[in-house]
Amino acid sequence: MTVRSTLRAVSPSVMGVLNVTPDSFSDGGRYLDFDAALARGLDMVAEGADIVDVGGESSRPGAEPVPEDEERRRVVPVVAALAPHVRVSVDTVKPGVAEAAIEAGATLVNDVSARLSGVAASRGVGWVAMHMRGTPRTMQDAPSYEDVVGEVGSFLVDRARAAREAGVSEVWVDPGIGFGKTVSHNLEILHRLSELVALGFPLMVGTSRKSFLGTVAARSDGSPTPVGDRLPASLATATWAMLAGAAMVRVHDVAATVQAAVLVGPARLPAVVGGRR
Image (cartoon, rainbow, N blue to C red):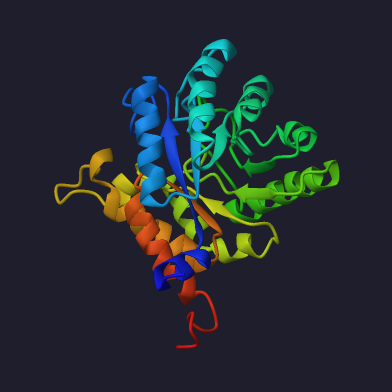
């Protein structure tokens, strides 16, 4: 085993985002075609993604729901084509879509509603519980918290424990950065990620290309940095999350994040692989 592959084995996991939608905030429409989606998924595999997360319904702020049949039509063929090459998760809030994707080879349900633990339990797959205030259509309508980290953590623990009791053996939690949170809430969550790591469930964090990054890392004239120019901010926050103890980061830019994860992995251990400090 090479040094790099050894380091990769102790590194946080990288989940690649594959949106087969016309309206996702970052790459909507680029991978709606099956061939384009498959090619991008295989590219992410080559770039080192541990999981490819396939979603057929946008969860951007203000997004409208997609009919179940249409979401299934978008997602299932891509899942089936990628499953022989990489672990695949399905990003959905619909039980029927989750079931169909699992039949096609998905082994993880990435659930922004945190309501599909029963599907995961019955099918013997993993489950990610994410915190979201409201729905994608309403979540950014003046979100308010007394203690955003405390409230998010309490919600995630309740859902994660219930899932374990229901028989889900692999339970992840995700604080839902950008989902019903202001810029200040998102930064507070990042600042206090260690508290969420301490909850005892593996933590997944997704900041990739999100709007708060465009606001915080604004252009010199004060205007938000465009989505396509947010790689530095995305990589910085992913690295911050991994160093704070996140077990997985969900990203659009897989290759750059994998490089960061390779370096972060041994930094989180008492000694670097091979015994050198």
